[in-house]
Image (cartoon, rainbow, N blue to C red; front, top):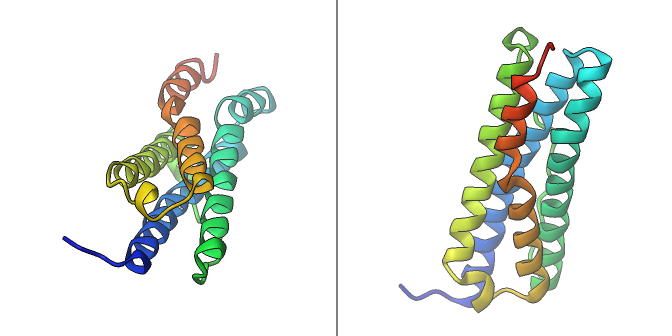
Length: 152
């Protein structure tokens, strides 16, 4: 399938926006879990999951905005996501957050596999994509460790 450079750049932005929205929901879910925990557990959650997800989300936003500017395309504004009802409990929020982070990594991985970032992208884009993916890759194991010790 052939595409124009403009179409390729727009596809990159669309997929990066989708990954960023997954990370926004992951961040909201980790924040909701934090609100349900005691101070000590909340501090552990913040260190193990909140900060890495927050960093990945910020990097994804900067990568998106920077690439849109360099490509001369309009950038969307990302809104705060809603985690849902607190009745789900902290463990459910954490699991949902990890599902969303994994989906963001999957979307970015598929984007990287298309070679579009190489063909129509730029070095800053490729570096940003790699950094976001790296930040979220090990989160599920960290979440399992955290939830296994939750309440102890």
